Length: 273
Ligand SMILES: Nc1ncnc2c1ncn2[C@@H]1O[C@H](COP(=O)(O)OP(=O)(O)OP(=O)(O)O)[C@@H](O)[C@H]1O
Ligand SMILES: [Mg+2]
Image (cartoon, rainbow, N blue to C red; front, top):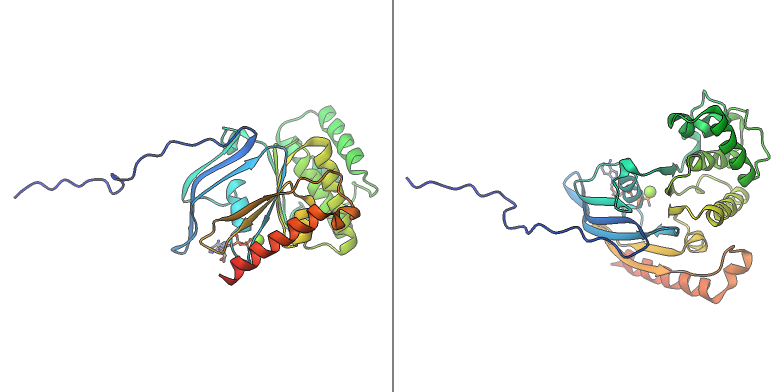
């Protein structure tokens, strides 16, 4: 009987070297693969997310927008691939995350101020450091409500403001936001959108924003990342370079209108595919 050599299953798959992104890349995603219940959501997905920019993620329902940012943020495990932050792993990177549902995002037994300071306390910061950072945050968000109240005593917009403050408390390199405005009324949406833009202009924090509102996605973005239906690929990355701060006048600027139109055309062709 001749000997059978059991070759490893992946013997023929060449080992690919990690290809870094271009200069100025914050997040590099290579060969990302994710299956749910045997069905591919992402297969060999590659993406470079630039540093100090806001990238809006837009795509058909269920294409994996939330899963994508959750995999990058380490909240959902990946099946294969590599995600690096400026060459580092997630554990060596400070990130912040703003959840869609602000009602479930805060610890209800802690006063709002303690919720916001929580990431600083986790880092073991001294009381003086915590107080200094809290004062900075209060000034930069121009907070008019009482942070000594419990989250459930605040309005939705105030709670979402507080959760954004908490996400930014320890100066993260990357801020993830999954539909942060979708549970807010129109007035609060406008308010928080402007706050986010102000914070971005002050700090340059890289932001990855999932939005189901195309106008909002383009308004805040330096890049609009358009995704396909699953198995999900990048349909297009549209740059949008209008000056900041963007204002109500931005909405009638030719660059804004054309970026929105092009995004919509790409989205529609993906949905109809
Ligand atoms: N834990 C899970 N188990 C099984 N399937 C899942 C799980 N999480 C997500 N999915 C599936 O993966 C796909 C992508 O989900 P995801 O929530 O990332 O999409 P999305 O683009 O954020 O959708 P929406 O536009 O509704 O917010 C969907 O088909 C969803 O049903
Ligand atoms: Mg989602």
